[in-house]
Image (tube, rainbow, N blue to C red; front, side):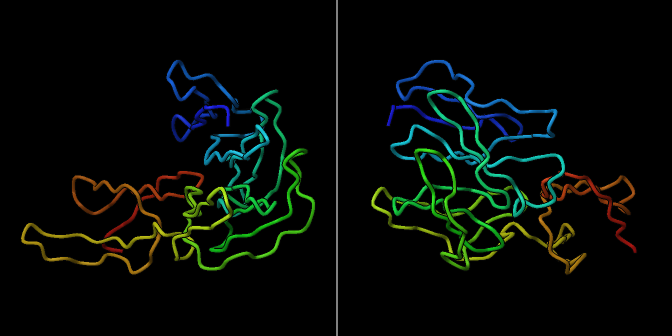
Length: 210
């Protein structure tokens, strides 16, 4: 409503704000490193409340199903913890905080003036695509409350490991699906280095022969 854009500059930053007419971005939130915060992501404006909802990535996080969701005032910069255990929160014109968890959208009554949940959450919609590894949730609200969503389940970025020879003959290395993002092979081809897209961003090794 104030003609500003709120965004995350990268996967390891706080939130920034910038006028739609251009200019220099200004910080809206700062990471609290002492509490293990690694990024603030998926900002969503609370219409009429001059506030933004966002999801926190923390060092201790194993899945974004357990991520904390917070709100920040655009006027004062004050941060408030809103709910623990979800990602990709939005404010619905029906008066609910909506967020993704375990392949469903949950909703809880929400007071936009005080930025607090005022009742227990309930399942609003099952079968919505989102990722435990990045926290992305594929849904949106119109100003009138119409919900758009991508049908699916949690961990849409799960993949199998497959290798191919120069003639295009494919071989599946593992039937297990995980959010594999980057793969590098050792010079002798016996080991792979894998980045598995979970919130802790760990690098694993995979022994091909075993």
